[in-house]
Image (cartoon, rainbow, N blue to C red; front, side, top):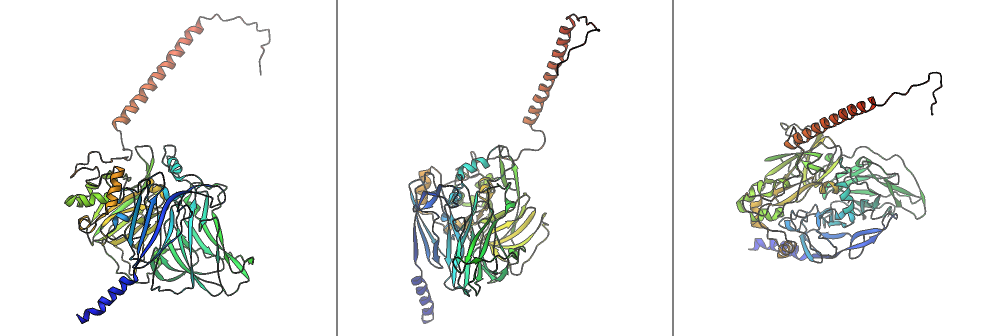
Length: 584
């Protein structure tokens, strides 16, 4: 027993140090004008916008007492959080939650087992585009890097119209090419510009967070160098870079050491990547800037020698070396955008566009017993992939679309194994000695990325493009991770069952709310337009041919009838000696 005394002491010390960190969030509509160009209704917290950052430390429990004061349901998703054994707090509507009903409350209790830079946002429809998004900082009591102060630098695109209206325009037969809504402005720290006050010789940590619906940002500071120390909550070896590229949902921490002179101020850039936009409105200022201020009113010293060499995250080295994963199971996901049988342009993995099931996938996994291991019970349109407990999983995502896509996996960090031009060679098994991990990876057009993770977190985890318009357009699928173990470990709070009941959403059964493999009534489609001659196509062609024949017959009859009429009209005698009058 004496040998166990130090262990008990450590446990008691950990319990004493941990605490509940509670935030009260009344999710409300607010009027705001962050870019100074148009006031509009936004979604804020406690009647303020932007929502303030959430701060919590390792081993604490984050408690969010949320009240929905909107006129639609809502949810909250702590982006990048593992939610181990708390899958029901992950947030995506109809995957793990039925939504917080209008006028109702919900308590999120999230044990903090991670450190780094994260964010929190609604995962109900396109709500976060309207402003319900905030930084979530998980502080490390044993910080490996030394710095004097830190700034949270949020970057976001901004729209003057309501996200629901923009979504109707995006998902419309009038938009067959799937052109995404182009933002009206870029926001830095919730405004059109921002100022970071530096003191000579101090080292600052800038926590960069891209909370956009669409835009990718390029961040740089004139006259200063930056050293990357973290991406998506994973510490890296200190790496000097000239610029940082952040796709939607990505985060990067950099260290910046202030200059020793206060004679000048400097410009920092947060430029939106216009390759993400189908068109560039004349009024759009996509090169947004802020100020590094040493002395108020001092002259701004310009430096055009910014290093724009590519920022390649796969070259970053993790500070703590993880074991490089192989794989027990592999999935190939090909990304396409096409017009489907509902006449809308949809995003797809392997030509399947996501449609929500009638029963949230988490509840199907928990209620279907042994059938939960069969991906069929989750419905065709969820594109569910089932993996076993502790399997090493490889996913090869090949982007055949014309644009860049940032893909986010809930519930995990994944190792970034390889990038390359498509097509991927399935006989090739790349190995990486020290792979960097992320929770969101950006994949350019006509490239593939290989990611791997260990299935050590039983739950139903969404994998999706984090361009919000693409989420709503169907570019999602669900990883069903160890559903047999889920049934042993996950106990859903009663208030979540009550919310589902209030919304009329079943919490048992397969994707159709039925037992076994009876999927009658489950979503089926939209689907790709079939190739070749279908019955409808043949009928349409027959109708066209018949219409053409009737048309030709009508023209022939009209011409023949007119000829006979003109033949009965006597021809007038013309005096050839008289001039013929003409009218210009």
